[in-house]
Amino acid sequence: MLETLIIMVVKIGVVFGVLLLVAAYMTWIERKVIAAIQVRWGPTRVGPFGLLQPIADGIKLFFKEDLIPNQVDRTLFLLAPALSVVPAMIAFAVIPFGGTTTLFGLLSKPVALQITDIDVGVLYVFGITSLGVYGIVLAGWSSNNKYSLLGGLRSSAQMISYELSMGLAVVGVLILSSSLRLSEIVHAQTGVSWWLGIIPLPKWFIFGQPLGFIIFFVCALAETNRAPFDLPEAETELVAGFHSEYSSMKFAMFFMAEYANMATASAMATTLFLGGPSGPFGPSPLWFVGKVFLLLFIFIWFRASLPRFRYDQLMTFGWKRLLPLALVNAVATAILVAVL
Amino acid sequence: MDIVGLEPILFAGLALVAAVSGLLVIVQRHAVYAALFLIITMGSLAGLYVLLEAHFVWAVQVLVYAGAIMVLFLFVIMLLNLPREDVPWAPRDLRRIVLAAVLSVVLLIELALVIGLRTAPAKEPALTAGFGTTEMVGRLLFTKFLFPFEITSVILLIAIVGAMVLAQKHFR
Image (cartoon, rainbow over all chains, first blue to last red; front, side):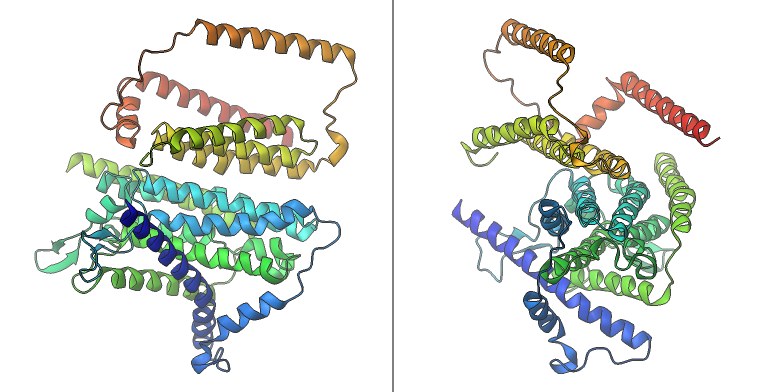
């Protein structure tokens, strides 16, 4: 009893800590990668390779003046950053980030590297991440600023639109694994299949569901408000969008939420399409982290390469291209599974 | 539930939050706050579903009600942008007060009758294996409840088409 409790607390602590660290260091990775793409240096001054830059930024944000404009709705203005960051953090609770471990024989029986394994894991992640939009909408509304309001409204419309395609893109995976439990979805992807009888391929769903993966990833870009879908904070038209009026740590919380959401979306894509923590050799958590960082790199790559969509283009793309495509993918998968 | 004795406390807490925020939905003067309290009510109801081992219903509750419909609801409220005093919650019109009183007495009698007529089961019915799992809910939806399920979806489709037609007329 006590041991289970301690293990649980340690697991939650580790996941929470790593997620915060990843969210902070993603800013460094993002600046470095974009700098490399644009043939610049990026941060170099604070620590070796600028590695202490996120720490310096954090300290700076802590000591900045915390402005609350006069005409804002104070309760919601204070609540919104928390509403934005909390779902981003707790969505990670069901994602398996490794196989089982005994911590080099320290524990009596093997422990699954996953905080909790619930029956409706996929739906849990979708449900919790869809709550994140409240933080953005309420921040936009309570700021009493037309640019903030427009940013908040845009983000709610955008997130609702792309959530549909995202859900439909996953249906193919659910048909193939016949489970909503994330550990079973990972389990269904272990092993090797021989492509054309000669080339060994891992049984990852990305090979069976390439279209599903692409749709999922594009929707993940839109759901996390990342370029080229970063319209809620389009600085050319909306100042800084929903967080125009925020400063200091409240501003930082929106930033943390965005990066934590990116990490969660990458982890979900890894779990659903890239076999989660499974790999041919070596410790499984390393495989998981490697795959997640590969996807995070693609997130940044997109930002450095593509210009921002116009708002009507975003809506047309979501409803008239992605949604029918996702539907066709789901129906085709169902027919193929039924026939074969 | 793993920990014995925690369930009644959780139930009491969630029920209290649901009831109080349900009351605040109608008492609040500001429409945005009223909508937010409705979300809290729905969240507590979702928690009660978890206590009843209905995990799939929990997920649907959060995903559909709290996640999507409420966002649209907020959308409407913000575009209307009601000022704080526009929703008076104490109407001075006597006829309205009388009507409300009569209706609430009727509701109260109805509730009392329902609770009074119901006999409590001798013991709690045991949970069947796989109760509340997605598999079980899906199996029931596609066998026993297939017809009502399909009818519901047709009704929703008609509602959507109707909304589209009305919106079209408005723009012309």
